[in-house]
Length: 431
Ligand code: AMP
Picture 1 (tube, helix red, strand yellow):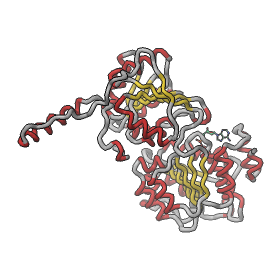
Picture 2 (cartoon, helix red, strand yellow):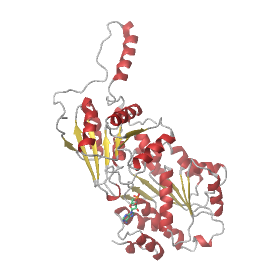
Picture 3 (spheres, rainbow, N blue to C red):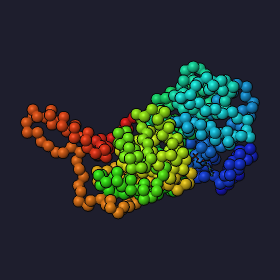
């Protein structure tokens, strides 16, 4: 199939051709006709699949094809609203609108927090057809009556799973309540948790489902491997991987903020330039670490799951799970950081005995058994039994229970960072 088979206008096809694309990606092949036909859409697609053009192209076509086209309108209140979880994604989506809409009389604007609101207000006043926004800043504009959402015809929720992970659900519901009832809705998400399904159920009407990869699987181009090792060996093993494979630009995942800091220090001491990013770091420290990482000044960026949500890096070659996440779906998010847009990527997970339940959950979710790899000198001790986090102890007298409780807490704190978490199956995340 070619772009010319999709019924897009000559102006749109020309802009696409200028990008050097002639074949639509699988998501584009499925999403474009459905959106052009006016259907609601529920699309399971990760970044890197071409999803942005998958919704941008047919939206541009719908806006400019009819009698109701942009030029004929006097008051240019937004007709399309795209919500994204991060400012980076908002910028990226709006750039795509500009790229593909370059021969069309369409105005677009991205509004997001962390920058002055006044230039955005001035731009909104000038008239916008396609508004791309992060939820918080959009609600600021709503509150100041600097945006009018009563003319929205198409609503896009991009990376819905990340939005929910970032705690935007209430904002999203508020925004939806402000939109006209009659509209087309498109929802994109890499994973489909029960929460996303619930949101989709209330939002979409008889949606066309588009599922480009079997749900909850990573890009085909990512090689996923597990190295079974002993917990005590993980640090050495990680250093070994860096030196023997001359790794650079590796995103390393740790479970806790403290663990991420400690690991970055260990790597740094071993001559492997590293920095940690997590929720306790200032925005400035995070931005600096990220830009040094992007510029190749850091060999490793050690991140927690939540911190990593805001990272947008193209073509990351390696992801290493120093510790497995508690929630299996986070594994999919983590390795989705590599293998984007068809590039080769490798995801390596260091798994010790205590993490076997998490590994089992992950393999169940992605419906495949991950390849095991053995690294000489780091073989997992065959006889080691899973170590309980709390050593069994029986207080002799009931009166001793208070003390025993305290000392248990102490031993819990000193337990190695990869200790099997309590409530591992609860599926809760810590923000
Ligand atoms: P996305 O999943 O929207 O973030 O897109 C991932 C990358 O694929 C972007 O760099 C796009 O420019 C690129 N892309 C989008 N559509 C195509 C296509 N049909 N052929 C090749 N690359 C594409």
